[in-house]
Amino acid sequence: MKKLPARSALLTTALLAAASAGVASAQKTQLEFWTISLAPLFNDEMNRLVTQFEKENPTVSLKWVDVPSNAMEQKLLAAVASGRPPAAVNLSSDMAVKLVQQGALEPLTLDAAARKLYFESPLSTFTFDGKIMGVPWYWAPKVVAYNTDIFKKAGLDPNNPPRTIQTIIAAAKQIKDKTGMYGFMPNIGGINMLYLFQEAGLPILDKSGNKAVFNSPEHIKLVQQYVDLFKAGYIPEDTMRRGYTAATELYSSGKLGMLITGPQFIIRVENDNKAIYNLTKVAPYPINLAGNVIHTPLMGFTVPKGTKDKALAQKLALFLTNDANQLQFSKVTKTTFPSTVKSSTDKFFKQGGDSAIDQGKLVASTELKKAKDLTLNYPDASKLNKVFKDNIEGAMAGQKTVKAALDDIVKAWNASL
Image (cartoon, rainbow, N blue to C red; front, top):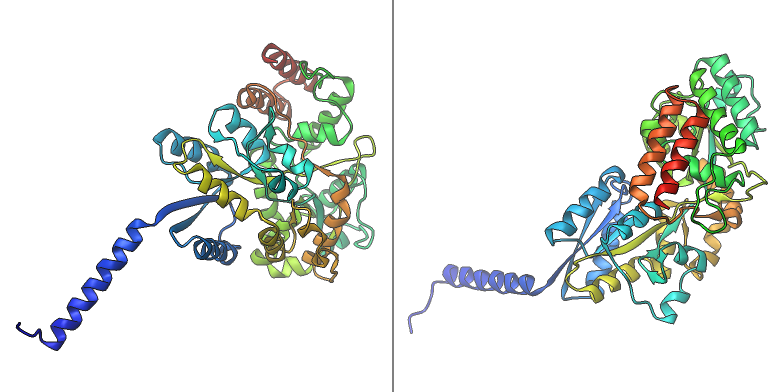
């Protein structure tokens, strides 16, 4: 047999190795999971999860995709319609309601041991008509981050921040009047007024759950106070359109006195403007004693309709939300809290510090006992939510009275309910 030259033999060996690797790669199951707005802050943690899952499942090649919050629903529906959905998708509780109603998610089959991993309330948030449609991941009660320099310029005491919604509004007015800067951007866009109603102890539906009742004088009064603030120029114009995203940007630029937000967004302030971050202190979100609750939206992982290997997809969702990974995620974010029982008892959540991030974690940890996801499940949620949003925006813009807006919403809702 004719002997190959040394260089040729090496090349042949390399080609055979590459071909072998290619075959091995082709034989691997390709999986993908999506998250909401975690890049680039949490790239390292997401990549760690990918590496760990692939190590535990050598036949799987896992890919992480981060999707902006405002694009997630349409992107997922398009993927389901095309027959190429990801294996697991991070959804907020309100997104899950709409996508369950549109038949875009698969129910999960959790045994008793898997169910016991999670707190009952968060797991029930992703349970619809007795079917578990997702597993809970992280949440964080709202806090009030405030700029101590702006407080001083407005004649407010940075060591005595507002503790009620009334004193927050008064402080916001004083900041605008004294400095020309906005005091706050209340989270009232979309359907967020529904959560403010419940925090104030005001009902959305009657006891039967079949009739909307949020057009009472008390509901009208609550909405009217924000309309009055908007008309008087105490709330930024893009409050209704861009919500917390605009609020975080404005606060990070040093042009907003108070940021009402989940404590995890304080990290964005630190990354965007260290000088403003260093001026930031954190106070509790005001509890309305009538409601005695803080709306705390849950994030979870769901399995989309049409996923090729549902068992493997569920395995991935459970991996991403297990005790160890939820605790690690909280340690990385420094400001979010797990929905699993064991990880929530870790001493990490009791550690203090002087930074705004440490303050945010400690303040939020004291609020957890009041935390509850107030997302409601009702028929035709997408359609009814749009009716709510459009009419509240109409009232804010002065196109109709608050009473007329709420009456019109309730009428439309009751026609569907």
